[in-house]
Length: 273
Image (tube, rainbow, N blue to C red; front, side):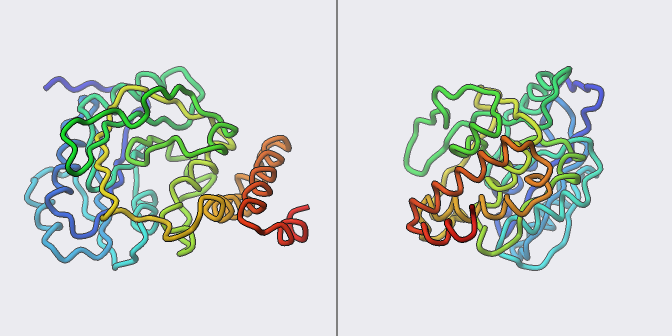
């Protein structure tokens, strides 16, 4: 297979994992098969006991690095361990039950060249249990995305995200608070979007396995309650503090709307004036 290399294109892949040895191997192999060669694949363990570590060592590729870790039960924790260890100029995120098309990184990096985008994402082929036909996750979505678009709804599939490493280390990593479990990726994308637009590739270059029974969700929270938690966290970040006044007003407006929808008008009046 032909391998291409672009300037300023070293990519560290961060994969959090817990007891999914077979799926994990599929995910890692899709990284190693990229036409733009990955710099390293950081497999960030969350307390696995199913032989995943031995399976990774058996691949025999020195780019695959196992990062040991205790069970946290929140994907933000192992992901952040990977970000801290990354030595590439870009960090790409991939969940252990998803995979990539071989040209995924190549397409993203080609389109990022010469642009001022600090982040990129792609469409995905959505694979669901019991459904034989797989369709793109977003039928008609167009990009790039700015903060205003992302404030309305999360349009970034985590396993498709590619982010400049220095941006993550300057602005924020994934929030690890238990109350943001299942929401941490949206929170981080918003944080980054306050300072960079996000390039979007409409091709389904990510294979997203949508398995609700095995996914990390935000519990029984309503959508307004979820938005309240995410935006409240965002207002406490350095990214928010250094954003333009217009963007801060946009965040505040969305938070007010979320709290009203969640029935928290009094709280909003007291603390968000």
